Length: 151
Image (cartoon, rainbow, N blue to C red):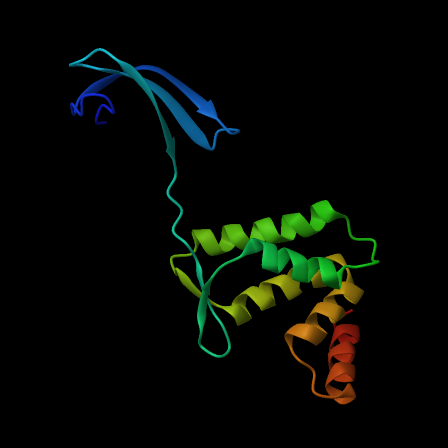
């Protein structure tokens, strides 16, 4: 680590602590040349996930966008906020652990629908109606029938 005061390339670590619930490491360092101390922070570099939309445009994954869509589907339903945030966390972790850095929006939608189906069927149908863009009442009824047959 280069010293911010004299730009010397070597320093020694005098203290190490975890911060932000173990998400980062704070290190106190001392420059070998000038003896001055400075602090560095280390964290895992997260590679951004790119979402490929239906029209083939690309945008960075936005967990808040997913969260707001799920909250809208769960509005006035007995689904706790912690459950919805847990769904978003699970989906985001699955995407981060995948080797693909580009993911189709349809994959994220299917993951969200599968999670909602286990939590609250009404929220699932609400989300599916927007996500799948039902063209008419028949496609909506077909989805409801599929849901009933799975029970």
